[in-house]
Length: 338
Image (tube, rainbow, N blue to C red):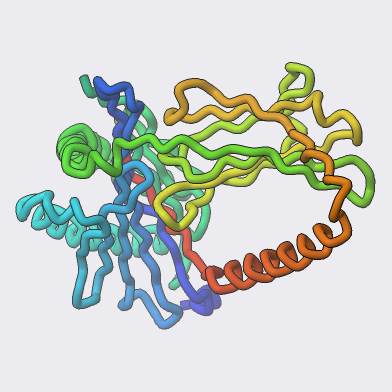
């Protein structure tokens, strides 16, 4: 089947991410439900195609599905069990059916690319596929037309237009996905519709090459959407910022930081601005120098502090090592936003 058989795996990002944004009377913001599906093929052939799927409501994983295992479908949060028998039976049937479609999509993509194994308002929906790590075909925002990555993918486009896949997808997004999203929000409202504000502060770190790094931290917030920006004398410094992606904290909340390098002595000219739906109003922070050391007992205090700090650093390093783990980001997307 060609040299491409030596590839360890082939990924098809293919799923219905129901991105359904919905505005609530409480003003809590928008909510979404998404499904991520990954199809993999082993180096030995296409007989062993496996499908893995997860579903999220906002930033919380709701369910997990895996083909060819004893437990194919399982809830990931307590309230999901209360969705009822009809919901879980419907999800099982839908995901098993979609698994067959996902396998067919992989085989078809391999063939055309000549490869071997390798009030609540509906805002928008999307349906996207990627092949072998690159864009393949996706449904446009009008949910009627398609965008393809290259001329080869146009073969799939013509086939899907003949089968009216766009119309079927739109009905799923605007119908069943919206209904299930609203049901999740009702049953899991204590988690999904909460707004935990961030705990924010600014840290100071001198640089060997000159200047200092001011880092604005936001910790313990939910949902994940947040904005951190730096200003100098009121002027936006976004282009000069270093920002990490929002990261899960491991306890159901999230964390993020944004940093700028500033000349020594000009720290007070810079302010960090934090916006999050859990805050009654945006935060404005700046670096606050620590109070001066007392004149009595300075030597002893420094020694003791050195012991404490050394121990703390060691503990942090150990915790990071223990918590290190490899993660696989699945590529797939069908979603609705309300």
